Length: 77
View 1: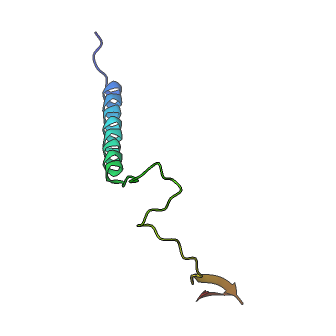
View 2 (view 1 turned 180 degrees about the vertical axis):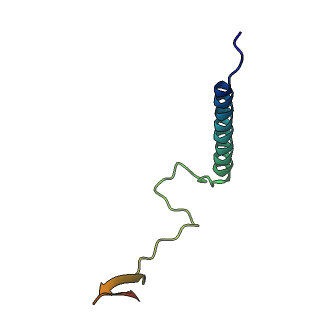
View 3 (view 1 turned 180 degrees about the horizontal axis):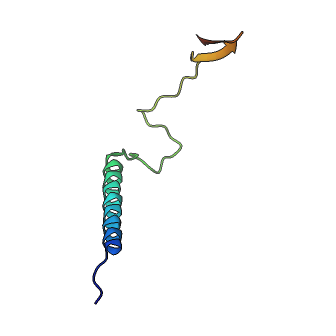
């Protein structure tokens, strides 16, 4: 039987760390999936429940920057 080398030990340690990271990420996603709400009536895809309101579309102001005569100008538009 061959004696373990430093390269094989480091490879094993690296694989163990990667497996632990994947496991931790998987647990995180499972917790997030359990916290997500589920539709009360999945069969009624077209009907809006009472809790949902229609989106009101309007104009929102936003900050816009542009160059004017070598200087930068930022204003709300």
